[in-house]
Image (tube, rainbow, N blue to C red):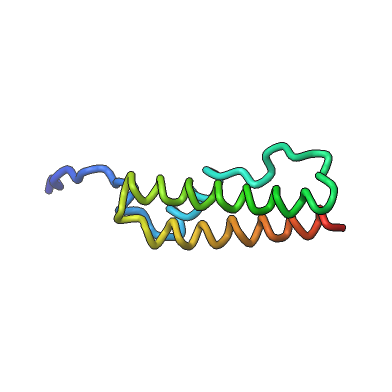
Length: 91
């Protein structure tokens, strides 16, 4: 018995966990700021990076509003990683 061909999966049909794994590396929190800037400049770096992440998340949501929840979850992970990096910089 022949089966009808199915259409290939799209990004939106992938499981949320897989979409998160795809979106996560689209924002690099480890982009060069090395050597670590001295305090208080490290606060400015943290602020600028978090604003960059917010802008990138907004761009992703504009491209596909259907992934807004995924983007919010990934943004939270980016911020968590940035905060950990910030703590390293502070020493």
